[in-house]
Image (cartoon, rainbow, N blue to C red; front, top):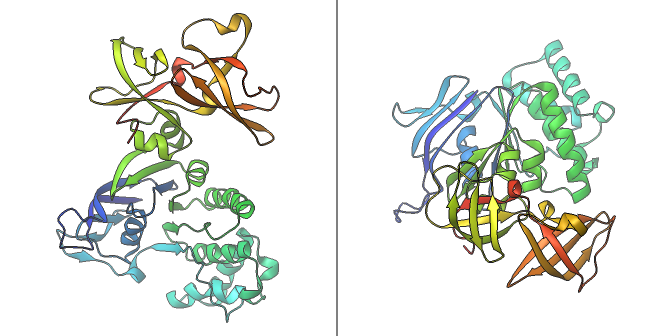
Amino acid sequence: MLTVSGLVKRYDTRRADAFAVRAVSFDVAQGEFFTLLGPSGCGKTTTLRSVAGLETPDSGEIAIDGVSVFSSAKGTVVPVAKRDIAMVFQSYAIWPHMTVRENVAFPLEAMGVNGAEAKRRIESALSIVGLTAFADRPAPMLSGGQQQRVALARAIVKQAKVLLLDEPLSNLDAKLREQMRVELRDLQRRIGTTAIYVTHDQDEALSLSDRIAVMKDGAIVELDTPQALYLRPRTTFTARFVGQADLLPCTVVERGADRLALDTPLGPLHSTVFPPGLDGTLALLVRPEHIEFRDGEAAFGRNMLGGVVQRVLFSGRLVEYVVQVGAAALRVQATSRSLKAEGDRVTLHLPPERCVVVAGDADS
């Protein structure tokens, strides 16, 4: 449904290395929820705005459903109004002098759709987002979550092939943001539209997406499913940015077909998760929730480490511990079913299938 190839955009032409977007390429399938994830200034919004036609790239190709909307080689630049897209902004962009119905109707008026067809589309869009009862209410008299639904209804009513969402939940409070996250994913699945989502929030990206492109310094660092990026990242940047992570420097001392023997600050460890063609500086990733406390006979075997609990942070359902293991400190997350105390001596198990070797410097 969407193809982006070799996209380049520079704002500061005086510096040879000043790229907002550099050689960004990806494909998005029909009905897919695709997310551009990264820190501020990484190029994700510039990429989205280029797809929308709000930015003109310096070079590259963009096609929507096989139709070229931008091509530097062919000199093609299709204006925003003629691209088959709908967009939801961070600020909602709700017209304050209009009712909910009038806001949703606005794109149809611009498209020349009126009469019975317009009424059908408006009622359908309002029903999908649960705002039928608020159709005649002035837009400013809605809550933040309701205004966001108006923005979604206004995008849905166009029945565009691609829905672009630029951090649409960032202005909501934490509880409402979580609720809207579920509603947005359900809505996208119900209507079957192709969605391109921009966010810096890893939880949003992981819970909403079919696939995620992690961006840094204008380029895509990794592109994969949420599960793969979280459980099997290939770089230290992705490991740190997507979820909590403890990264330790490591060197390979023995290499097998499906297992690596490693030398680490924690001592010798084994890993069964590593990318092909390992080379250069490496780091070992261990997620806090993947480390296990072991007692009794279960405290013996491979990848067992002895340590002392240095800190306990109780938050109800989960407890986060900091455990000193030799010269290194590890974060460990466990449920509150069984509690440890500061000063307790413990045995930790780092399952080899949860010890992930990634490329890069653990301290960078």
